[in-house]
Amino acid sequence: MPFRCMQSKIEKKLMSEAAILEKIESLSQTVARLQERVEDLEDLRDLEAAIADNAGKALIPWEQGTKRRA
Image (cartoon, rainbow, N blue to C red; front, top):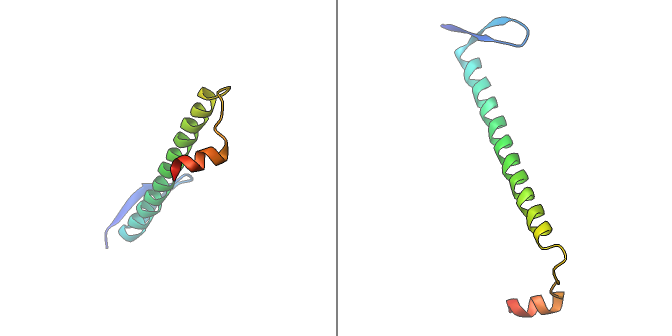
């Protein structure tokens, strides 16, 4: 069975191909979660910018806003 060497934080250690694939899958899931988090933070930044841009502007009463949608 072939072994490959991956650098760990502490020392070099031999890992089987299955272990390498498992580690890659784990890292891939972590990257996907981080991408979602970045997208959420970008949305928040856009929302906060829109709130700041509209600061001081007159607001529409809830009742009037809901009538517009109907």
